[in-house]
Image 1 (tube, rainbow, N blue to C red):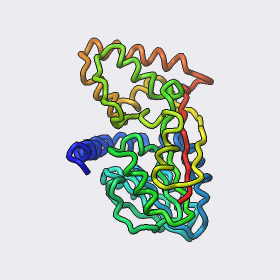
Image 2 (cartoon, rainbow, N blue to C red):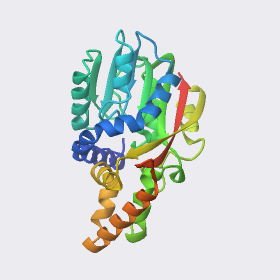
Image 3 (cartoon, helix red, strand yellow):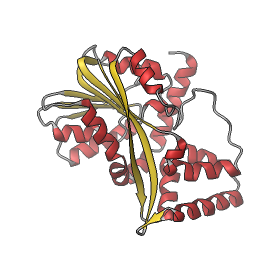
Image 4 (cartoon, helix red, strand yellow):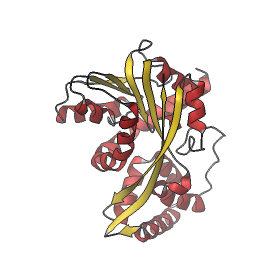
Length: 281
């Protein structure tokens, strides 16, 4: 890996370690919010009772935890760059009484597993942040057994993801954010239609197809939405850090107003859309 990509990887590790406390605090909300995407991936991956499953960039453990509970006769390994995030995953597994679940800190671009090790390989919301998308796809393919399915979820277009744009677009209106280089890691990096199909195909997978899944992020109040996003989202924190106190207050007020406009039946509901892509080794 080049020095530039090494730097991106190291920055990613530092960021996820730093925000691990926020992810632990909001873990229950995140589990419910992202569950439909994990369920779609598990369905597409066609996982069976005695399979050995790999979940890459799993953070606090999902969807690997759900898989482990569903296949007590199998085994699930989850990986992430952040040891602190994986510590939360291991704690979650212990609380659920899962003995067929293990964690491994590693880089998705250099997985420490032999060729053809796993019966299914999953990666939920990791590809957008990998330093080298193509290298990661080849690694996920390499460790999959022949006939195994490799399945990923990536965020769809910004206009279909109000959960993120409600706050990020507001910050961008008030703060001069630097434009990232083309292809740089970011939330919507993998959103272009067909991009992940091409990545998976180039990695050597066959019968590749995509499925769009939409759900909602739900908060009890606009204030809860603000707290959540400022405690788990690094780009939000970085953007707000460039604002003075008065500007930050204006941003907060506008975000709260927008979130209140999304109230349905007493709850803030914000659209969340992802692309599920699956291919066969």
